Image (cartoon, rainbow, N blue to C red):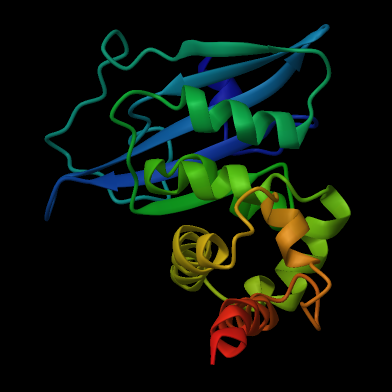
Length: 215
C-alpha cells in the first residue's frame, strides 16, 4: 500500500503530506492518502514516510522501520468521493495525536485545500462547522471577498480567529445565535454579504440599536 503515498500524480487520489517537528533535528513526514475503491472512499494513513519522500532532509541515524510505520486504513466513507464530506470526516477522524508544522496537498484545488488543512487542526473544528454552513458557491465567494487566495496559512488562521471572536461575542450580543454562520453573513444589515469586515460593522450597528432606543 506504500505506492498509494507515491509523490507521482495518481488520478482520483488526494494526497495530504505533513511535516511535524519535535525540535531541532527531529522532524518527520506523515501522509494521508484518499482514494476511491469501487463504491467507497478509503482513507489511509502512514505516520512516518520521512525516508520515502526524498525532497525532505533525513537524519541518517533515523532508519525507516517498515513494521512500525506500516500504512493503515484510517476509515471508509460510503459513496463517491465528495470533498465536502471528506473535510467533515477528517475533522472527526483525524489520527490520534496528529499535528504538523508544514502542509502539502495534491489532488484538490482552491478553497478545498485550505478547508482540508483546517479540518486537520483540532483548534478550529468548531470554526470549520460554521464555514461548512456555506454552500460551495458561497464558500468560493467568501474566500475571494476575504482575500484568502492571496495569503499564506498564517493569515487564514488570523481570519479563523476573527470568525471565532465574532461568533462567541458579537453574533451572540446581536442576538443572532439562532442563525447559521451563512445566514448571518448575508443578513439584511450586511452591506457587502460574505465580507467579514462588513459583517462586523453590521453587528456593531445591531448591538448599538437597543442602546440608542434606551437613551
